[in-house]
Length: 72
Picture (cartoon, rainbow, N blue to C red):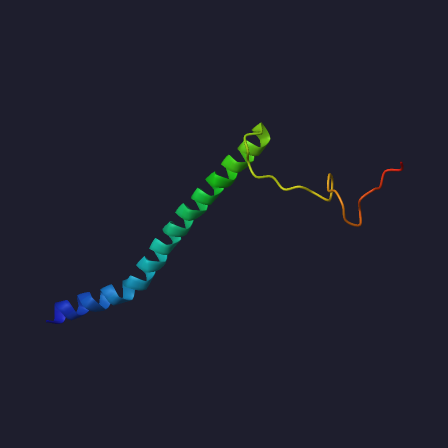
């Protein structure tokens, strides 16, 4: 019975560390997946294959306060 008690105690002491290790591996795998998706989106935007891009400023916007009216 003494051996089983010591074994249970060791398992209880090691369990939190193992959980943190597994969480760390899971985080790294998710981060790799996100980075791969971002790289693919940027490559598509550069090649013009429908990747999502962000537009800066109000270029090409029609109407509103910043619109320039044509004389005529």
